[in-house]
Length: 342
Ligand SMILES: [Zn+2]
Image (cartoon, rainbow, N blue to C red; front, side, top):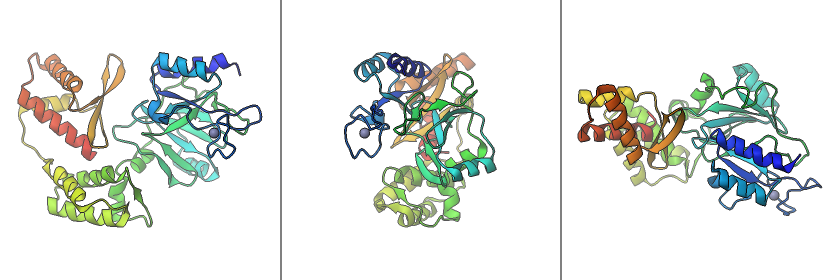
């Protein structure tokens, strides 16, 4: 492998909007070039100190990385950052499951033991999931990354785009319905059909409870009923359990969302205009991904960029300015939807 090629390929991925990061690679003896004899993730872990958080599309940063580490493997951040998530199949049971559900036709790469299937990022957060859908089937979403072609695996094999399935040959397809169903509001199904032993770990507890609260509110349940349902879910699955005061806050914020609001025709009009945009949350913040001049931008919903974009859309459609109170109403509604996943 010519080392100049890796830098060019990393830059090419970045130009298509994929945030890349440099990973360690195998040395001539097949050991990880981090020089740690007990490396737990040979030729797969990041060179940079903040790992996937350092992933970027900035061409200058990428050039500096591959000049410093010319043979670095190429990692691509999955999730909202790059506009896709990946299904990672790494064994027989994963293939059997795909066989049963139907073979997805989308960007696909060959990995050491299986394949990565790359799908368009849906309009809701995608958490990393290990063996939750099936054995040998993982999801790489927000905060995760994949090792991309032409990286070298520690075994000596090489990651490759599957024939006819490279990113220059086709676009990432929307995820099939069965996969979206498995990713979307997984908690709601599980409230009525609890999966024995399912654990919601730290970092996912808030968004997990928020998404349940959102769907219960949509079914017009009262704050008390939502609180009771969340307490039960928290006790059964969250480890460690969230404080009761935190659970109460989630129930309260869900209950502020009016399932059948009466609003002005101006706000309604804006909400209709923007009904196709993707909303999601990260921590306690709501974000929107919108299409601007043929590319996608992700903005903080309460931020000035997004507000300006809303005003612009309204002005284009109606030929007059959107009032401040209505703008605020729209922003609050969209943020509630993003936070509650509804
Ligand atoms: Zn290593």
